[in-house]
Length: 153
Image (cartoon, rainbow, N blue to C red; front, top):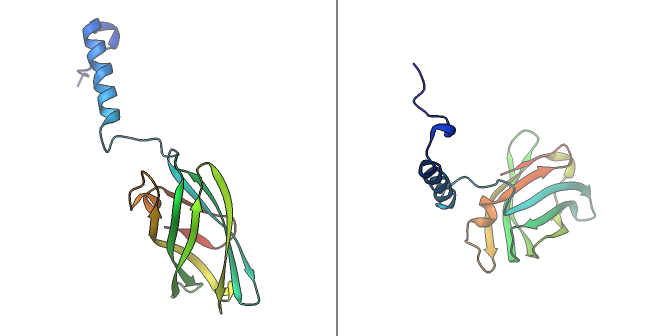
């Protein structure tokens, strides 16, 4: 069946303007396609290291949200290598200035680094700052891992 779309060369000037306006309007409506890299919190699980207290977990976090974050905290779940939930805890990343990369380390008391098979970001328990919605810190989170432990949301 032949296509019913006309090449733009056959459209009138008014038709081309109408198409351009329709595209502009669609791009500004809520839910319109957005650049996935825009407005992200990039969180990298960087290292798990044995410590005197148990296991020290290190993250590299970059705020690319376009605004300062006064406080971000995430509830995470630690899974064993067998896939069993070991514990749930909240890690407070505190303030994250816009366009700034920070390293945050947390000591997990009585945790065995070698037994951790997966780290899951369960939810954002805090997401505070001017112009931020409560769900922005989880919706805009990009999680990556530098090591062999699976990390994500």
